[in-house]
Amino acid sequence: MSQLTLYGEKIEAYSNNNANKIGDNDKAFHNWYRFVLSFPPHLVRKYIKQFGLDKECTILDPFCGTGTTIIEAKLNGIRGIGIESNPMSYFASKVKTDWGIDWKELQEKSFEIADNARDRIKEDKDRELQSLPEEQQRLLIVNSISPLPLHKSLIIFSEIRRDNDCCVNHQLLSFASATVKYASNLRFGPEVGVFKEKKIDVDIVTSWLKEIKVMVNDLKNCDNCKL
Ligand SMILES: C[S@@+](CC[C@H](N)C(=O)[O-])C[C@H]1O[C@@H](n2cnc3c(N)ncnc32)[C@H](O)[C@@H]1O
Image (cartoon, rainbow, N blue to C red; front, side, top):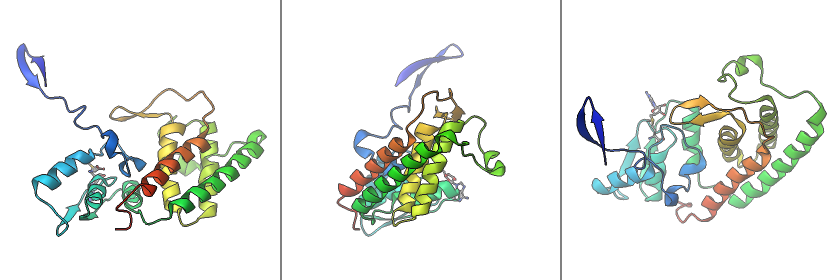
């Protein structure tokens, strides 16, 4: 709590900067993909406790965004149902609550995809950069991604889709997360905005594998995964 002066009057103000932060022990599954509207997992836990919810209950989140509520429900062994109208957030929620895949396969297949993507990026070095079809490019915020990171991202994207293995949805979600975090010029603070253009040649394949590693570790260490 801090003191602010508003129109000459001293008022007490509560800052929710920290209250809304995701705790270090809360990152499993939640951090696979988050957006500015995501609320923190500890808030859901607080209400699970406050309402005395247990395994006999079902939690419904009719506006589930990227899945915070249904992940917390699942982690607590409670049935959760989420509804979400935005296709990307819906996809994130769906994948973030799918813990039934084989993490070893996810790891192995992703290494293969990464090798193929690296080879293609090397081979394509002197060729024309890949870009999006005009109608898709028009949907992007201007300067939100520079031509070279976009080129590399499109190569990884096509390799993931070409492989189309059992883990394709997990690979696509980690790709979306890595692209926003490492390849794009976007920043969130809290609104989305275009920041400085990335001058360094981002190793987007390694960044993508970093996100895959997070998923693999969460799945490997999860006790509730077979629920
Ligand atoms: C504040 S966000 C929820 C964030 C979520 N609790 C989380 O932690 O990720 C509200 C969500 O409601 C979704 N939404 C808005 N209108 C909707 C509707 N009519 N039906 C389903 N979802 C809707 C939005 O797309 C948005 O993702």
